[in-house]
Image (cartoon, rainbow, N blue to C red; front, side, top):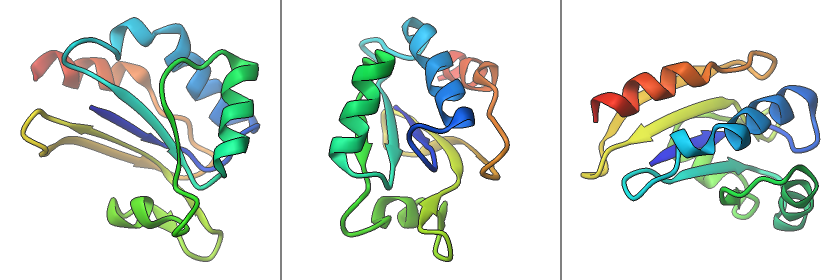
Length: 120
């Protein structure tokens, strides 16, 4: 499983990252791999954004209790109320096999995910 936390829907860097995922989803979706995008935005916001951008992977709302999933993964910013750009690749046993966390303005590289998934 690839968990992709992002801070805000409808923003430039988040949209760029998720559009790259959308355009490369064959690399991140199979019988063995499921990609999930997670933010603290509400479900209606996520649904609207997914429809506008053509995202076919699940978009999950960590809206209430606010940021609880992001907190569990250590990527929630209490002072802003959003998740950092955290990516977690979880193996079939439920162990985190790879973790990368970037600051809000810093986009991630999909090639890192590909390399890790190839080793699992």
